[in-house]
Image (tube, rainbow, N blue to C red; front, side, top):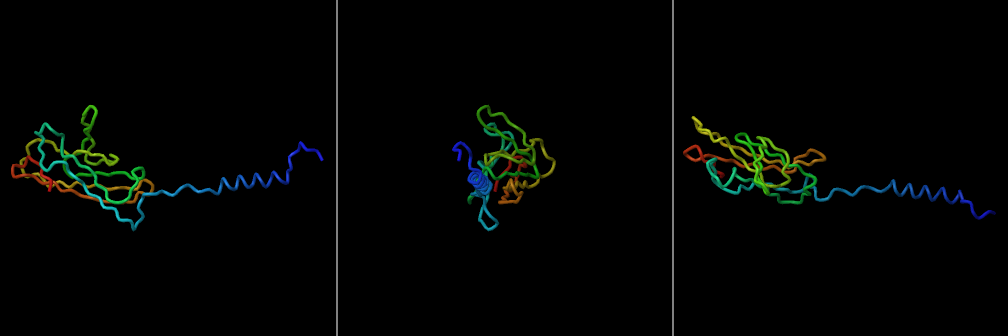
Length: 162
């Protein structure tokens, strides 16, 4: 026998074993994403209780999501909606105001601001309903829902969270 040749009967099973082992591994399961029975509670935390567009200290009512439960931020999307006014982003380093509209998807759990156009209304302003949904990016399922209602003072120019 010649010693420089490959033993085909030995090599073939080894190659099959290596390929089989590589093909049979599974991707790690997503952890931190609740299943249908996992309790996740969500709320919207305002940073001030009264706001008017005449205030120079802020661009609106800051709204921060408060999540209680186990969620991995990489797997969720935040969906903000309001039926009156609109959302803006205002942050460091330059404190530039970015308009986000009355429906905004994103935010990654960071604060956004709600504001309204400051023109005089001839009648009473409507109650404002702000909703926040946590959406599973992979399935589109809603993992959590919260709502915040904003009213108005008697002068109809100051938003009041309640």
